Length: 344
Length: 244
Image 1 (cartoon, rainbow over the protein chains, first blue to last red):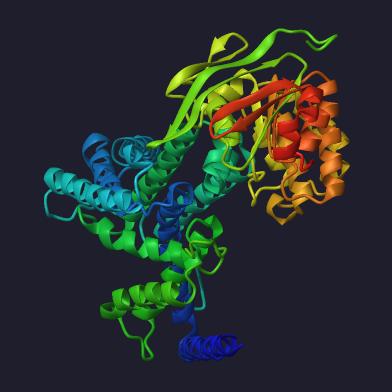
Image 2: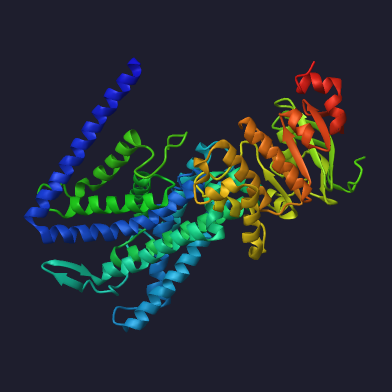
């Protein structure tokens, strides 16, 4: 009885602190909005776009976690390597430059997308086969440490092939405005990112909810042994899951490359951000990963882009990983996750 | 022999040994299931009943001995090929996919089948056996009662159109009214032609439903015989039926 009261008091104190914090953030956002509404919306749109890119990386973490309960730390590095390889395909293999005609550019981009997504689905499935499958029945710490090892390996493959310099591609899609209404604008290069990300999200949702193989993925995530008893080939399903995660990382790599410079270690930080997004939404939960990613994207954009009392980009990492710690302490199941016996 | 029943063996276990690490869980189990039969495997907790099923369905391969299904050696086959071959199971503790709907769970039971055109008819048949499941068809399986979940687990196994049905503790944790119902359904499924290997702690009900039975003790078959004979066997009555 006493301990129950104690718990109640503690949880209400925690709730009040949390609510206070959220109220403070909302107040800060409101003041910024009133002071400069157009700028606020612009910054929000940037956040949404980046959040969508984080989202497809976060989905890679979350589907792999769902099926193996493994944090695949190599995922961010697979993303970065895919971006680097995409730069080779675009610049050296296809020889595209910014002066090419629109159909050539669009065709070249789609071709690159298909090539990179296919290639990295194989890369990721191979990583699972070689590094994680032999540890399927080992204690959970073993594959986790292996994942960190694979992360370093993939990063160093990128370093060995591409060196320490940043890679980029010409500005194929100019940052000209799609629309501008009263100071609120959205540029083509960002829209292009969404035009890749949103259909992929839709495709993944459809696959997981409607197809036989997608349902098998959910079944294996929920009860691996019972799935085997139903005649589901568990190893094959896990391979397919890694292949999908790899192809999503590949798509994210291209979309990221079109807007930013990349090098061998770009995936480390972006991977951690996407991982935070997956945890924020509830690891293993697909809509949660997208929601978490968009929230992280918005938080980052508001932090870096607003003018009234914004901490600025120097604080982005601190804030993002501070959020990670707060979720792990106060709501380990994430925003949309379910409480599991493991509490994760 | 059972009069009127074909005597062809559909499943044969011959001297099967299974180990969990260093633990010798099955110490030479031999048993057969014939076409058309309900065979029950009874015994105390930890006697090796579920382990026997895990050897059959490929989750724990036998280290020694052989398992033949319809004449084919399946001793070291993978679980999914065994299901494809025609052995379906309703596992102990039901093991439904809790965040999938009843319909999706049933679909997973039919995962290895390629004749998709017959799915709907088979699902209708399951709903006919268990009208309660039809009412719950779009509900997540994890939100149903234990009895409903057991129905769903049996229905899911039936969706495989099995040539042999393995039932592991179908009455466990259920209210008496559900237990009656479940055994009634098991008889009905069998009457429609599917042989059943039934693992049960509720020995009385199991022996009532079965044609033949095996009694397991610490990883071995201690007794075997016609179900009616086992029911009147003094040792069985003392140990498992609670009769003096």
